[in-house]
Amino acid sequence: MTQRLAVIGLGKIATDQHLPAIAKNADFSLVATVDPRLATDTDAQPATFDSLDALQASGLTIDAVALAVPPQHRYALACQAITAGWHVLLEKPPGVTLSEVVDLQARAEAGRVTLYASWHSRHAPAVAAARDWLAGQTVRRVTIDWREDVTVFHPGQAWIWAAGGLGVFDPGINALSIVTAILPQAFALREARLDVPENCETPIAASLAFVDAHKAPITAEMDFRHTGAPRWDITVETEAGTLALADGGARMTIDGHGVIAADKDEYGGVYARFAELIGAGASDVDLAPFRHVADAFLLGRRRAVAAFYE
Image (cartoon, rainbow, N blue to C red):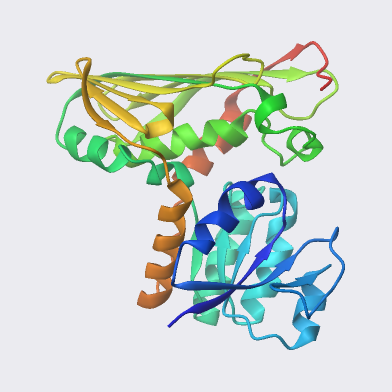
């Protein structure tokens, strides 16, 4: 059955990724968009609303919502949607605290609706193949290099620098979502340094050091101050060879030899998974990437750096 869907929040990620993916997925029909910058117009196609309250009051039939608002606003909107009996897709990160997402899990279970905490980078073309190749391998070392220019990928997004916005962990959590999916052993943070601009509440760069269950070191460098082409790279050294993921998981090599190179359609995978979960009457709320970020804020040493001005 086609799910009648509303997208809540029409920022850059929604217009660049969610709307095109929905348009290509026959399991969903976009019937409404919600954003405080929109005028409520029930005759528009899709209908537009300036608030979730206005959407509910309209009487329009909705089966599911995708929440693409900044994370500071997701919890209240998700609670409202679950209470209305709607399935909920959460853009990453799923919230601003672990506690509120755990509560959403309980609410969704009680309301018998699907809750999907999506991690779009897990749907990059080479991630599943990397997971399969690493299964049963002995990992010796993992290196994550995740750098991009915040003025290019998050222009004018002041929320990212406020408490709950995650700063450099907003893209960095994508790397963590990949490594938690592909590595055969669990891992835990041992130390971290967070570079926080003196006029911001969240880090502009981070250096992380983890170890896995077999004491293999896992290091991550994340930086929003990078210029030029972004670096979204993960290297996994094993006894059987070195696996490298590049371009956020779009390309995979083994010992330098190409294995997979494909265009990314991550959000196509996100919506395919959402439809699958709804059809099965199931939820998917994997908090592993979010827990690692929470650990970084708990354990990380903060270093004040120069103020950031876009």
